[in-house]
Length: 154
Image (cartoon, rainbow, N blue to C red; front, side, top):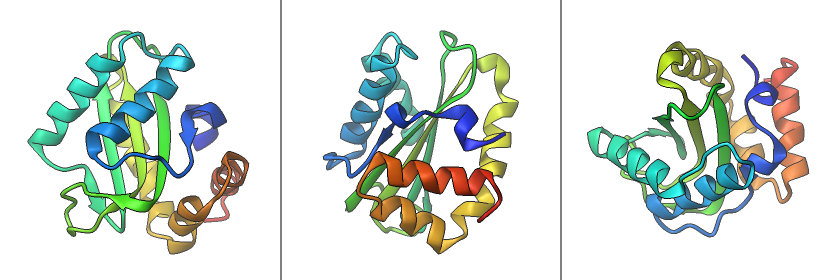
């Protein structure tokens, strides 16, 4: 599993304007809607916020890995957002979130979440990877970082 198989530049939002989790999920949902990956933004936001009530997806180091299962999608997709200012998230370490990964899977592909979390584990331990994405000023810069990661440079 690789980043470039799961996302597109259109599913990356650099320096989001969001000030809350819900705002962040709305920005990412709108990107997924524009790419005709989801049909109902409000449903995605409601489901994702419900998942947050079960436990924060803020995993530390300014990173959140949120996920939602939707039967309307056939393949796992990944939307990515960055925030230079940070978003209050109730993360495990109490720090604001600067890098959000929103994973969408079909309930029949539950193993994809585990595979994606495994894929994310190595590069997210690397400060250069995290900071590179957060500090990217353009989608193109962020995309190059994902390409480098897929090519084993992190």
